[in-house]
Length: 77
Image (cartoon, rainbow, N blue to C red; front, side, top):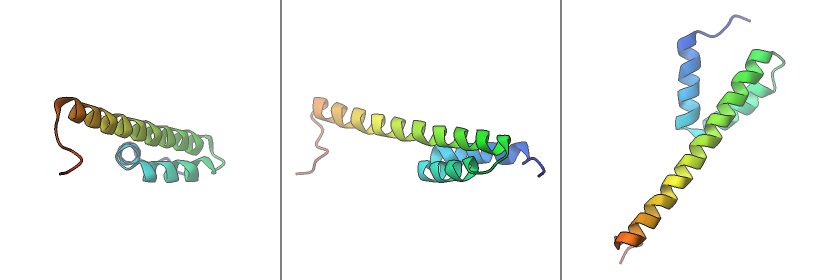
């Protein structure tokens, strides 16, 4: 199978980071293929998806903690 162009690979990695559900699904799909390059790409996409999710959760927690400490009303009236 011909190798994917370099631009296409980076686009998949960026999409995996920006949309973690896509990254996890694509990573699992690629890891099921027998070729080593596909498995490597799948692992990387899955890791990027997990890292993006952890960063998103950490950012949300930091925002809530900051809002509570400064007295911002994030919960509503």
